[in-house]
Amino acid sequence: MRYYLPSDDLYIEIKASVFNQIKLQAEGEYPNENGGMLAGRYSADRHTVYIEKVVVPVEKLTGRTTFMRNTNGLEKIWKQLAKEGLRYVGEWHSHPNGSTQYSGTDLSAMIDIEKEIAIENPILLIAGVRNCGLSAHTFYCYKDNKLFEYKKMIDLKELFNGLQKQMLASLNVDREYIGHPGSKGDATEQRWIDFLRTYLPDRYKVDKAIVIDSTGNVSEQMDIVIYDAIYTLFIFKQDGFMYIPAESVYAVFEVKQDVKGNIDYAAKKVESVRRLKRTSIEMVASGRRTPARPLTKIIGGFLTTTSSYSSIKTVQNQLEKLKGYQTLDLGCICDTGSFYVDYKETPPADIEPTKDIEENRKYIEHVYESREVNKIKFSDKDVSLFTFFLQLVSYLKSIGTVAAIDINAYLKAINEKIDEDI
Image (tube, rainbow, N blue to C red):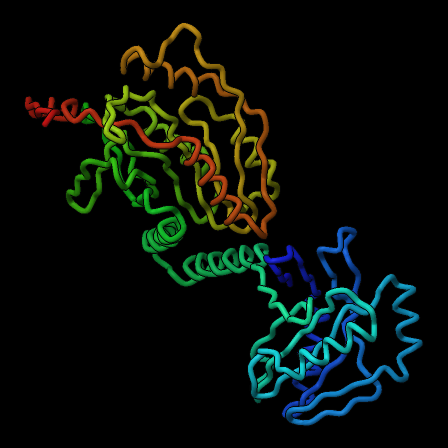
């Protein structure tokens, strides 16, 4: 548990086990106040205090609005703590049925403590307690006859682990209790779609869809397509299927319950998107006409709940065998780990991608064909979901914005053309 005082760049770290001791002592004395002393150590720069022990006073006076203690009988305890490298760092006490705002009495007590112990910036912890247990708590720093409130910091590991457990539980419920294979697959796909819709920035849209190009070619139906929310100029919906133009696509993923037997299948579906003929034309950005940008890579991967393989090495070996448009960039096996594949790529020296769209397509194809695996990195299984997400966001950021669609290329299918200027 970490706390931060921005005005002075000061931190507090307290172990959960130590805080639980305070919680139990505060609740155990309810409806009376209770309290004690805090022992810990400072970082070398004295910006962080690590609270590691709670010292219970031998002599104390408690009441519903009163807590007083003295240090009688604690000499041996403090000597032992000193041998462990610990020292007095502050106080704690409870406020039964009250807030964690300090009182005038609390401030006066801290003024006296600073004089008595000659400590710089002692800490005060106030724990609010009600009949249901500990309700709130606040750390304060005493400085210049004032108390300054620390802010609780977010434990990112705890946050990520909570998100991971929630997602995995949902996926396992679908896997265990939905009997029909088709319905089970649909439910799993929707879990992943909802996750990405929730956490990706609004500039991206996420759907199950078929990707099309201006010649009428189509991809396989993709379980997840991440595409541009602003520059996707049209989306077709017919007979329950959604069709998205290839130019708008950032990433595609195959979703399965188990990775076993599905890597090659996912790779072929990704290939069906990458092989489509994308267009790119000049566009107006911030009032200025900019040239057509080179085609970007389309991120490809798979998302699964589990792996029945005995070793992750089997997954790595299969990923290494993929070539060209079938190469996969990243993925997530939720209960095993997420991964990314780092490739060595050799851009063709004899092809100029900005010359025209045909040269552009040849260029991007040669880049994919040149891919050789440098390394495949798997994350820890406890943070597989969020490492996958952050890696995806990093790739999306590196792509930037998709190429502008040549609308007239699509209109050739009906022998029509539009006026591009107003």
